Length: 231
Image (tube, rainbow, N blue to C red; front, side, top):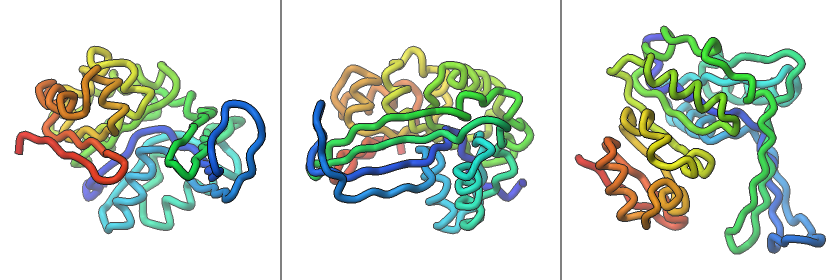
């Protein structure tokens, strides 16, 4: 375990992506292309790091179903340690339905399912405290948010945190996220999320997050990105 460089913690969802000409509020449109794949913000990051050759692991929960097996196998194919992913009996693996149109607009619908069952007891602190960095993303349910806050108090101070709050956690605002942001080495957001989080545009918002204690703030801009840091 001691050689694992980055551990991910976040929701595990099967992603179902449907590409359409345009997203509508009411009516019927034709799906031009459909794709299904294992996903989740932190999961995608850990998968990518593993493909780049880093030693990675993941903490999360899946259901005892075909989708859960697919997610585990997908991680294992690229060398991600899955020993800390719990399989919950009689639960369904989480899923996310994403509609995306040619203009880049998207609509996301999440069914958390097994992700709602994660508790602090599912987290092996010895495992987490032996890694170099913990990459954290969001859960739908507030119970799991409280688990993350509790974890921040139990983590070794030497563990670096990278944090991708997503829209769900960004909407909670700076005050609610302070226990996590105070520990965050690298913060990942997009323009909308940093505006939700700080109430400011992405430039001012990035500076606010740096002042909050984050060492590096990454704001994706669709095409291109902006990085602010103390380095």
